[in-house]
Amino acid sequence: MTKQANKSGTFRALHSPVAVIGYGNQGRAQALNLRDSGIDVHIGVRLDGKSAQLAKQDNFKPQSISEVVASCEVLMLLVPDEVMGDIYRSAILTTTNLERKAIGFAHGFAIHYKLINPTTAGDVFMVSPKGTGETLRANYLSKVGLPSYIAVAQDCTGRARDLALAYADAIGCTAQGTYITSFQEETECDLFSEQTVLCGPIGQLIKTSFDVLVESGVSPQLAYFECLTEAKLVCDLLVAGGGFDNFHQKISNTAEYGGYLANEKILPSDLKGRMLSVWQHIKQGKFAAEFIADYENGFKQLNSLRAKYSKHPLDKVAADVQASKSC
Image 1 (cartoon, helix red, strand yellow):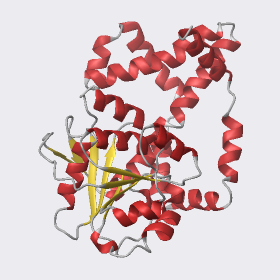
Image 2 (image 1 turned 60 degrees about the vertical axis):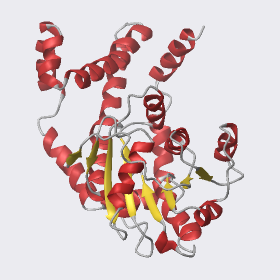
Image 3 (image 1 turned 180 degrees about the horizontal axis):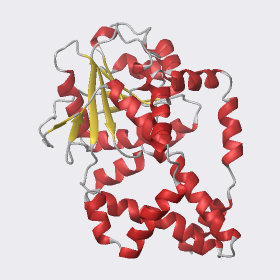
Image 4 (image 1 turned 135 degrees about the horizontal axis):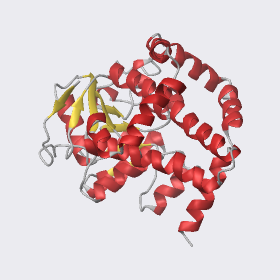
């Protein structure tokens, strides 16, 4: 992966109007940022859904997906991975002059795993902000920006990368730099980080440590602050400090010493091997196949896992703490 030099303000050749298809976490933030950057934004959603109502509240005039596809040359597809293929086939693939349209993504899943075959389209690019839609919007408003990945899967015009950079600039992602990657690399790395750290083990570590303290007689509120809110403080310090060496210089010797010893007591000795097995599961396409199969089966496995891991006592404490802040 290579970094594209910061050039905020120099990639303004983004053609209007732009169709933002989907108005969820990323769709809403990107549409608002585009509009504030002077881009004519058309919102494509199901007109009977909650997203359409939210778009109206934000002073957009939502249209059907087919309508915005017909009227715009740049289409940004910001819907859940599992429905992208269906939407592409029903509302985009049937469009006339599709070869003249550029299609953008915020995640490479649908292209890499061939849920979408865009060979009849024009340019196919990706702009993947490294943060939630809420963070993307907040950083745009504060003029801080948010780093992003960009990639090109299909370059019919010879200007697909320029278009990706223009789009990244318009949503506020060039101030901190854009990093050039591929659809495959972004997809596989994103899935790996989610599964091995961000959306799996880190949460289980937090919940289990909370359980140990509470079951040992510690108040739930104190356990919440120690195990959850301090995790955010540590992550913030790691990022701001530029890595673990600087981080260790900013914490106490007691914390550093105890952390090293606890690593050896808690983490399995074959941790790296286990992570490699997750990586291979992703690389071989097995995870994607299982995920799509579960979607087609009504998400029975996902719903079962949701039920298994929901309603943890920490969630109630977190809600109570947040509610007390608003009082």
